Length: 492
Ligand code: NAP
Image (cartoon, rainbow, N blue to C red; front, side, top):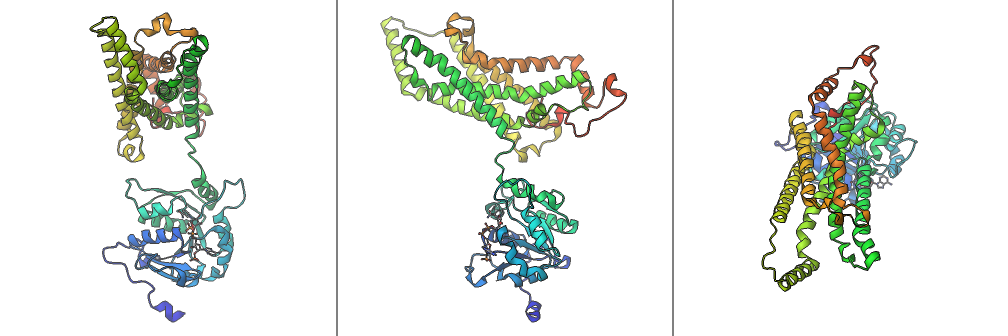
């Protein structure tokens, strides 16, 4: 065995590869236990970045030739672990960890990287990494890389921003080695502290859109409300009242009435919490007081609400472009033309209506354009390229521009129809009128806050000034998120 280990297991890296952990630092040969999907992808990435890799399998002869890239050796688990100078990845499912106990001795003093994921969200109990640490007390266990899929490992950092990997360990040296390794592999490592964080890291890939549930629910409920309202007002009541059959409007026309309403109200919901936060700070005369939890949560979900608003606005644009393609639109046009011919009307041009439609279409297109810009800047790779001033200009200045344009789009659509009694069948106002309430409140509220007497006081508060009642005795509640400006994306 000793003789075997004298001959290098792997050829030195090709000259163009920049070995990030040199042999001198004792970590150039990295072992991976297990020869499955994760192991293969990790080996590909490691080799591409100039590391030397040896894979440890229970039965190396059964591993298909060509499965691993050139330069990777497949050995028995023991030989692979012995060959590793410092770092050993454990790429087997956690239920098989006890079967690795025979490797205790060669693994002693080495860094064991646990890449496993949890199978369910548990409450309490040791994590996979903690169990591995219990089985190998003489090794330093580091949790990491589990949030990256085998596919992402192979794909590399071609998609712009490096992917985050969450890393934790009780041994700071071992953690530093793995953090450096992650950086060397083109990831963006995040130090999550001690091994007690491993349970959360293992469960991270199981959590489904954690920050999206409330915004999606709010958008869905708004959609349900406006759709049901439109259905009752425009379809059900006319049918019950005088047998008018408008049910054909359900799949397209009603949806297209609902989408802009949801888009506009959701966009107003992006800016409303910022206004509420400002009013609270003005009223309290300090920013060093926590916002209520619901407001805190709302402020943190503005980006998601903004993106959902963008989705609805985009769908509304597509639906609107398809309106004239419908058979119903063709029939309606033909019937109107026939009635016009019968009535002997040669020219049905109404100047006012022409202006109205052009204005509302133009505002809608501009609003969607600005909203698209906001959505693009909320992408981390784009947002991180902007400085704080640019980011707030886009998210706050352009955000209000999008809200104003979208509100004008709806106002021009409504034109003067809201002032006619015929717009209130069954005493129910049209959808566009309901839609305008919240955005108008937000825009007027923002203008109100821009008054110098309020704006200057608010700016002072946000720079740490406190009113007399808070100054003595000075108290600062720790952990408060009382700064609405600190919340990025679709800000006040
Ligand atoms: P896999 O393709 O099934 O590979 C697992 C490997 O474990 C097998 O190839 C086998 O290698 C070894 N193995 C199987 N039974 C064993 C046993 N009884 N005792 C010891 N070793 C055994 O699984 P995987 O997708 O690579 O996942 C491996 C680990 O990576 C899991 O903990 C998983 O949670 C984690 N992970 C995977 C991904 C992914 O995208 N696949 C992403 C993140 C984390 P040998 O036959 O050569 O011994």
